[in-house]
Amino acid sequence: HEIVIAATLWLMHRYQQTGCSTLARMVEQHLRWMQARASSPALAQACQRLTVEWHALSATRPATLH
Image (cartoon, rainbow, N blue to C red; front, side, top):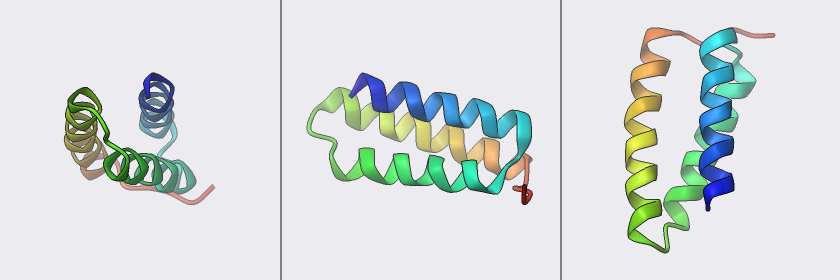
């Protein structure tokens, strides 16, 4: 699970730098995957936290096509 969390954080960071719509879709896919497979309280909490962070980030930086 740590790998998925780390990958999601990396994708979010890259999206913050670029605003790339492909990265935005990938972040959303990762969050959906984590939510569907949250087999532990720690993963469920991480998913909730990342979802809140993602909504804040994506609201301040609209996606662009690359």
